Image (cartoon, rainbow, N blue to C red; front, side):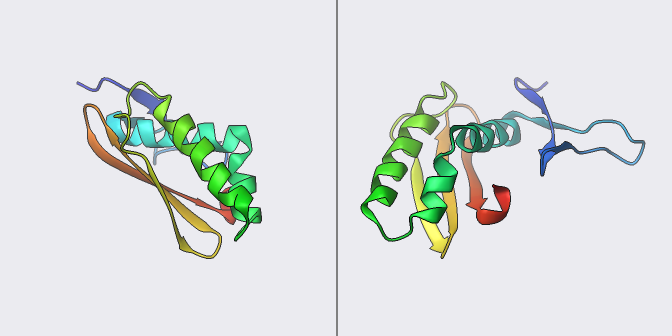
Length: 110
């Protein structure tokens, strides 16, 4: 039995299965989706992607780490934010119960 269950959202819409019923995410995937939505809701993703190579980027990364660590399901001190390509960022963290999660933040997500 899953502890966390959430609707599966992609590009702002509920994902439907073949029977046109809403699909769900559980546990680790639900936590990762919640973190992405929290980041997008704060507007920090816009700053991170648009202010490449400035001092604002480091400040934004710290704010994002603190935001992610505020989630009680995340192990404190395990959040990493890395730029893998220009304008593409990844957030990595350890959950308390479900292991590692990772989510990408790109300009297309905004």
